[in-house]
Image (cartoon, rainbow, N blue to C red; front, side, top):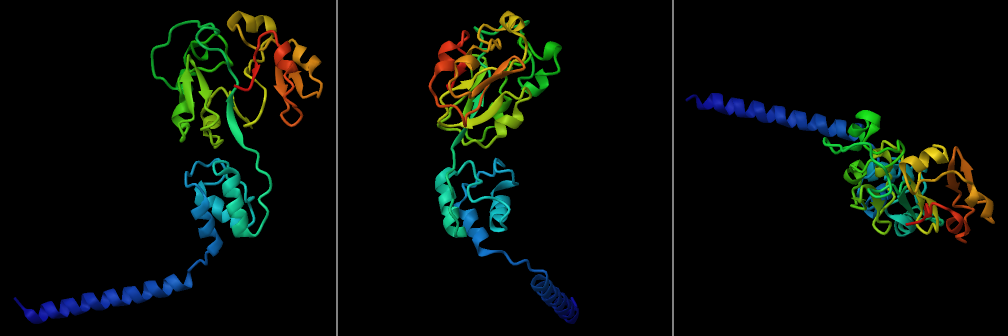
Length: 265
């Protein structure tokens, strides 16, 4: 074995490594992007769920946006007021009042109250079921399919299928919005955690047609609208809607509703 050749090869390899290291070091300094130290502080405060509920690509995206002044300090729906207060301290801003939100499923058509056209046996995924006859076995085309796409999407185990429909545990829900995006029927919305009443139906069919497929669906009778003292509830497209900013929680609408479909549970 030629020892001299081995030594020369080692020197060449070592020299190349040193040159490459120097080049990388220079390039690193030249193209280095300065990171605002507040961004790292905010990232440590954020919950780290990377759920995207804030509208940004994970917690790092939100931290960068807050530091750049492109997002509010209370933009994290998961962290809520406590996290907003900490971020406010880092940014030297008032966090402001953050209203806690929770997901709400606009359907009460469970196995007993909603009519089914047939028994379905197949892939249990709401998006896939939409391609079968009538868009699923449930007679109401607006109703919850109950195959759990929202359950699979929830990173907090806050939503489950109970008696054929999705139900949200509002105490566990972080209002990240992933269940909203997962529902092909657009049945889930965010409402204030303290909301006293909400309409648990999404059907825009006329009352007669609703009653043929569901015992508890909104029939658009407008009785709730007439008795509301704060004009917080209106009926549009045969469906009652509650303006949570106007609602005082008096309960007049829920009491008057013949289908008992106005609830916050």
